[in-house]
Image (tube, rainbow, N blue to C red):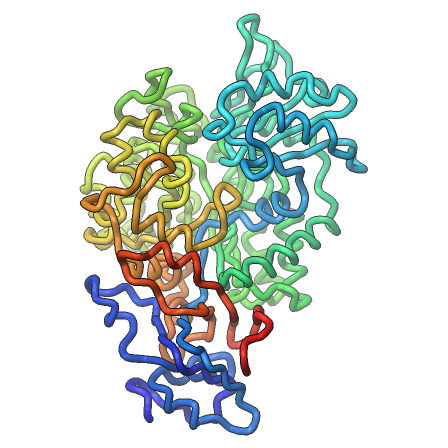
Length: 578
């Protein structure tokens, strides 16, 4: 049987047959035929998809062709997680003491875990995963006197807060005389002394004194994480933040050295993921035009090109900019007041007034644009999002759309901004699983009306905006199946998603937002993201059919049994026939 699109001119290296092929293209409507095209098989030759069609494609096989019977399984494009902190995830999974919900149900248990943790050679205990949404208040008090023999730093699940014990505060020299840095907050007791909670830009005060993670430790963690991601069907990702600003983000491990280590891995053929990197010149608070100017003049943007590394494997795409913080820290910038403090928040860029900070953000974005790079702008408040979009829209005609600048997370007071983004070629990368897991807390902070509007996926697609869905790991799980379900259901831990929620999208739209649509963000839609002849053979295989829309939770029962990058098998579950 011939393919409805194209037949290979050579004997294929690999033929998959006997299942369903979902191309990853954005469907024109809810009809899954927009993605299936009646295909049940595909052929791969020289790392490229050369045919998609019926099971007759297996007759194209030669003596050296590997034939895989899908047995009713489903072939998808490789998952492209367009906002996954690879280095932070690696350290979280394989480098730090775990104190997340799976390890501790209360602060007493956190203290017990830390109290029994061995002291690493560098003399610092690093932990990760606490979340006030699950553990409740009291973290600073719990950790204050924990382990007086050694400094302890515990990073939260969001990457915007950390807790330090008294020994760590002393090592960092943080006292009642220490001023809050730009874009950061040192939580204090009534007498002005620090409690140990450092939010957003204040984290740099602690991370700056932490010893660098040894290269051998990070290298091992990255290899283990890469294998895990491939086992989940992930073939591409954006690492949103490596460079000199690393002390202001997560655990500070995303250093310039980490950026160079990825290059070493690519040069040694150890990097099988496709990775786009955003440079970070300042962390979650206090970014300035001066810092960005220094970073751009450092030559980091050419780190990989100067080494002859294939940009389809590893490339520096642009610069990450934190324009505001997050609602739970009261550092998101919103038009209307929110939270227990009834605050509007403000931009966390350098400046003393809203006007000064807006002007500084404009200068920062212009510098990135003039350098020919992409800006990924963290904005969680509607005022921050809409200001960033307005500033991007004011860039020189013809340049901004070419760069494909984009908003990360995003909140909107109305659809006008989404239409502006579509017209101006500004992308939107957001995280349904954050909304799903922390939704009850966010609802309490933001209020019912704003939370109902949070992550307007249907409105964004209808406006024609380039939307992608990402994990923001280690903030949430890298399991993309959970992200798909979260986008379809829009549920929270305490409430099922409403069937009439106007911002729900279909599962195939969500799949496109994790395959073909993030390829646009990567300037890579001509070679990856869909399963069409001529595209690189980045794919994963599920061991069963794609679930019906009204039973999308069954996606969690599907297992990734095979993953390929450029036709090379990088995950192959034992027992599958060949």
